[in-house]
Amino acid sequence: MLEPTHNSELPPIPGKRYFTIGEVSDLCAVKPHVLRYWEQEFPQLKPVKRRGNRRYYQRDDVEMIRTIRSLLYEQGYTIGGARLRMSNEEEAPTPLEVQSIAKECIVELLLARDLLSSAS
Image (cartoon, rainbow, N blue to C red):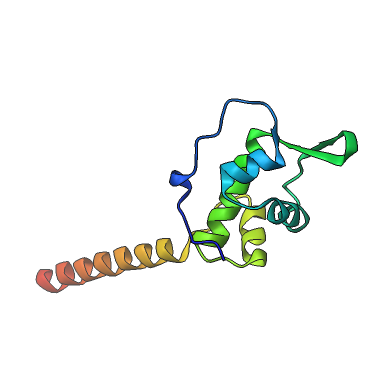
């Protein structure tokens, strides 16, 4: 299994219009067979196919692949969970974001309790 690496450690995406599957594989640190599998699992990932069924990915596709890679390898989502997360229009908060919001609410409630108890 691949070691989780952060997307910031991936090489920058060149200013080209189209990328081959080999180039995308190198840019995203994912093997070509994994990219082909992800095409089946994520309906939004649709590279252009030309002569001989060759795949050509655009910059948006490369960015989407990096997002999928991050969800699966770094954030621990399953394929189904990542697919659901990618299909949602609005960003659902991650478990860490939910935990952070809950802690902030607790702090605010404690402050409000202290204010109310000192006012009485």
